[in-house]
Image (cartoon, rainbow, N blue to C red; front, side, top):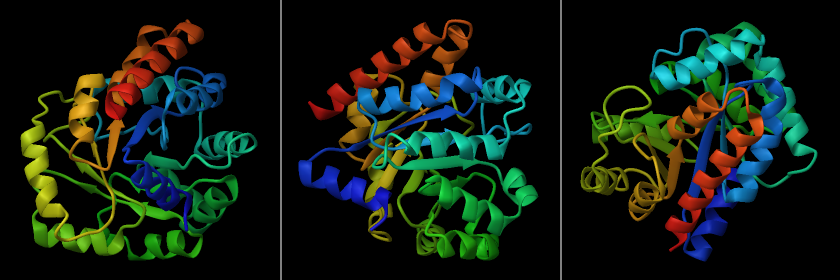
Length: 267
């Protein structure tokens, strides 16, 4: 059983939902990422999504685009991201880590080389934003060979027929994007999300994480009532931007936000 599957099994037995924060690796400085990952876990995170810096993050809004720019100013590469995960595993062997990013850096490294080195570093899953399952056969083969979960996105416009095809390729969990648009969108309607998830559950038994538009404990708790996992990103990355030259303040602000979400979801 993978770490991701074990995580969801444990939470289900406790009647709780997964809290899944996203941060960009190397933002605002590479030295901050590892301590932040540990702080996220201590604050109540169950799975960490770690963004791979990329120069053309077309699915992301300004907040995460700027985070990637800050990381790239320090020359943060995919190999450095893997080293961050490897260092994280020296102290934490249980919290799943999912790499979230774009296909180009993985293609440049070589798909098999990336899959092998990611697994060796302690990565549990990969969410490649610009890799549709219809074009993913070769890549997914390497991910499965090295026991990396393949996580795909679904959106409000995804039909049930296509959702079924996506879920046939997916493992670990699927990520439902609750809003049309890029990351950082804010017009979250939990009733619409609940309706969509009812349909998705007819085509998959995989856990469903929901992201986009989750900004505080109230919105996290509302989404947690209908989803298996709550994914939060832009609000955390925005705090890093606010305190880019004050790492302790940034960490404190992020920890406070995650702790508030965890407590609200558990209530």
